[in-house]
Image 1 (tube, rainbow, N blue to C red):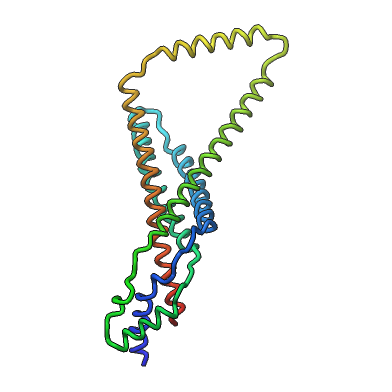
Image 2 (cartoon, rainbow, N blue to C red; image 1 turned 180 degrees about the horizontal axis):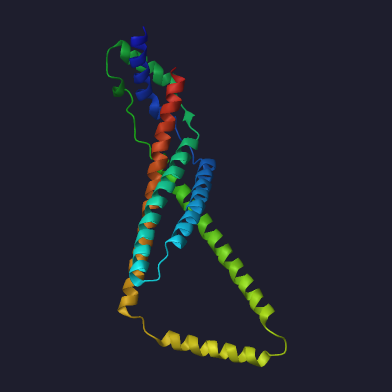
Length: 241
């Protein structure tokens, strides 16, 4: 009897997976995934900073090697972190079982007639996982940008306050001369044309940033899709026990 029950359960699992649908965007899962990505990235950046300070080099070749290794390290680590966050997002998505009784009734009728179960309703590929994963990545990116802006703003305000505290009273003329000198230097710097080498370096950096962001979004989307599929299989297996 047990030998016949296991194939029966497997047929129910494969046949009814698509009946566990995601009706709407589950924002609680998206927010949770974004916060998981932000927390893991914060810890990863601290680890990267600590390792970078321990192996820092002053030579030109050492700086190049450090920059290249840091890019590869950040790329691989970011992809792994966002895949984990996307997977967890998919596991947290709320599933809605719809028409389970109807599905089982049709399946039992087909089994009685010895016909293929997949002829009644075919398992369709669900892209809700990728949508939730991309939304979690986008929200994580927004949170990171806001956090970086607030941190840089707080640092700038702190530096400005320290500068005002270090300036003695009664020297407005010195302050005015310093401001005029800064304006002249800024104007002279603005007149200097950008060299092709500098533009090429900036272009390579932008392409590297684009690659990191693109792979991160893909990792989060794929991880969430796989996590959602695993979640649906677990729910179906528990139902058919």
